[in-house]
Amino acid sequence: MDPLSRLFGTPARLKLLRLFLFNDDTVLTVTDAAFRSKTPKDAARKELNVLTAAGVIKKKASKQGSGYAMNKKFPHYAALQIFLRETTDVSDTKILVTLRKAGVLRVVALSGLFTGALEPKVDLLVVGDRLEERQLASAIHTLEAELGRELRYASFTTEEFKYRVGVYDRLIRDVMDYPHRTILDRISAE
Image (tube, rainbow, N blue to C red; front, side):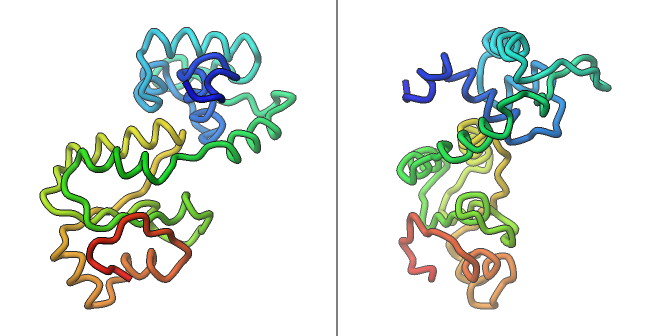
């Protein structure tokens, strides 16, 4: 268990806190919150009740029934948001281990959310061979649960990526021309 999970009680509570703080305009049902944070529904319900009792989130009525949203009037809202933004970090190694389940990786570049750059259209660029889309989507979902935010990503085969680099594709340039971190490069992408 990582130190922040110990500080906040449980890993589920920490994931839910991140989810609501980083998506503070979103109303989520218990089912949505459990899915997006990758926590069991019963654990999510329990932790949502604890966070509601603490005043961190509040219950709201939505079109799907009752849901939960961040309480922006919580006295320590800004401080908690800054603290969790500063301490939310998924290591490069964890990203690679998670993505390797999808296939053979050739290039993994981080942009946008990972670098603080606002311009890029994607946060994560994945190039590989024999990438299974379902496995990749599952891996991305795992990273999203850790980060508390949705990730914009693009995936390409090695051949498709080389072609796009050759024709100066705008999406590839948006990643490579702006601040980014290449955490894996087995084809000399830059």
